[in-house]
Length: 265
Image 1 (cartoon, one colour):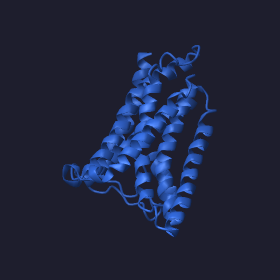
Image 2: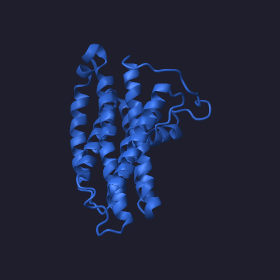
Image 3: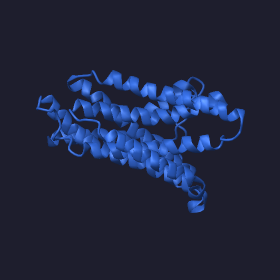
């Protein structure tokens, strides 16, 4: 139970931590402060509590597929928020390349609001899953202790990986260096849209299509490395055609919005 708790909480924490790290890096590259971060975390934490407390009732919506539909909506919303955010980032990259004073500050007007919204949605989704998991073991004696210890370890590792990514990306300078977090955000957007498609497949609202490959022998998605790749780039050991199409659509939408923002600038 200890290892299960570590891996589950690690995966849930990683997805939010990596997204927050990339958003923070791009903001600092553009000369913006991180005032949006605590607002997004607090709002997401409150909504996660509400979502977790009402999970049973929500799961009964739409003939017992309410949880899948709600999760799909949250993940789709993250991708939709990242698209206009990417457009602003494209303008900010152009301003930074031109060495404008406070590079990209004017171009990224509204960036903080969108960042706070993205963080809120991510924390709501992942935080609710963590709270439901922990709630199922409260008051069960020795299991409770093992779950809490494992959850603390998983949470600590997830936050640490997010901070390491932040530290690695922050020193990157120049036009090419500043594109790295944007490309990573595109992977996150594709991952979110792919996950939304998976939820809709489980709810029988989408057809899955055939599995494109099976790499579980070499890299199981439930291993530590698999969970890290899942959080960062949406790794699936046996993705379906529908998931692959949605992944590419999400990633390309964000990259296209970034390039469109550069042209406008």
